[in-house]
Length: 214
Ligand SMILES: Nc1ncnc2c1ncn2[C@@H]1O[C@H](COP(=O)(O)OP(=O)(O)OP(=O)(O)O)[C@@H](O)[C@H]1O
Ligand SMILES: Cc1cn([C@H]2C[C@H](O)[C@@H](COP(=O)(O)O)O2)c(=O)[nH]c1=O
Image 1 (spheres, rainbow, N blue to C red):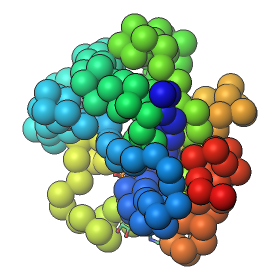
Image 2: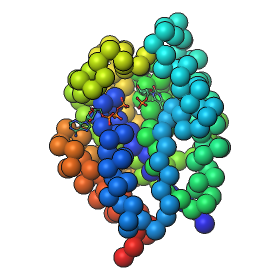
Image 3: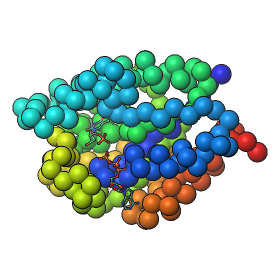
């Protein structure tokens, strides 16, 4: 049996983690497949260790290529150890971020080039592609404001980057989303949380109707 793979993407503070938790609560009863929720960077023991290195605000000297390769290394382990086995079992896998984050943050934000970053990620993941990507669309300024309200003083190394970096990342997402119109669906994340959750559930139900009880 083959499973299904959904990813959530968007700028920092768009609400991905919060929305995923609420979506899972709402679809659990009617979903015919076991649901596995995971995240990047991280999702497995080794990948979480790499996450700590990448996001540590003390690692100010990390260069952009090292950063991109560490995200890809973490992802490779996450895919082989967690995502692929779950998909082989037939699960619905929902990941908080995946390759599109690297394309936007490292490809565009760090200026490494979307094609170059796609190439190292194709190597890392064996070209694994989500069935559906829900992009929580929010002005990065609003996302950063949410984050500073929620965790002022404990922002990670990437969250501490200047607004100009986050605006480049947002532009990167727009390029990536335009390359994959069939896979990537947008939800207006400036709405109240219940509306964002409802729109996400609707997209999942319309894209993957076969995973729900009739
Ligand atoms: N629609 C919403 N309206 C207002 N606040 C929201 C909304 N969705 C989430 N939040 C709040 O914004 C903050 C960031 O949410 P969350 O951590 O889920 O975002 P995220 O996209 O996962 O962020 P990051 O990528 O940085 O981990 C939290 O305090 C959360 O409660
Ligand atoms: C997967 C991935 C993530 N990032 C960035 C985005 C965030 O600022 C941090 C951590 O993510 P979280 O959602 O706050 O847990 O890492 C990135 O730059 N490249 C990536 O591939």
